[in-house]
Image (cartoon, rainbow, N blue to C red; front, side, top):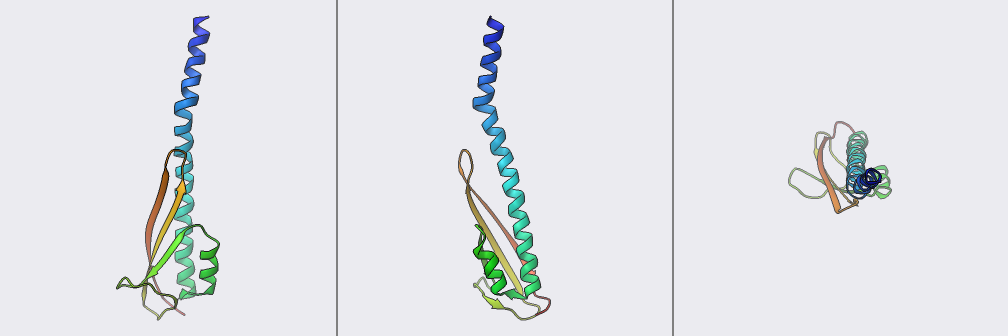
Length: 115
């Protein structure tokens, strides 16, 4: 009888402690992967469009990520940019994990190659 109680106690400890930690780790990995994929896609879109166009704004509006486009001086920019200009894209994504509220941030640089 004590072997069964010990086994049930072990299963209960696993279900209460280790399982939520494993789920949180898995969701963090999936969310980080999706965040980096979205940042790469935005970088490619801005490069293809030659700046921040209406198509870029449509993608931004449909996303939960906060985008900020800046020039070399740190001023926010909008619209089509001149060829050769660098655009710095800051990404920020706030999401609620199992235990805490998490924030993911990154920055990409795009050089406008064409219009």
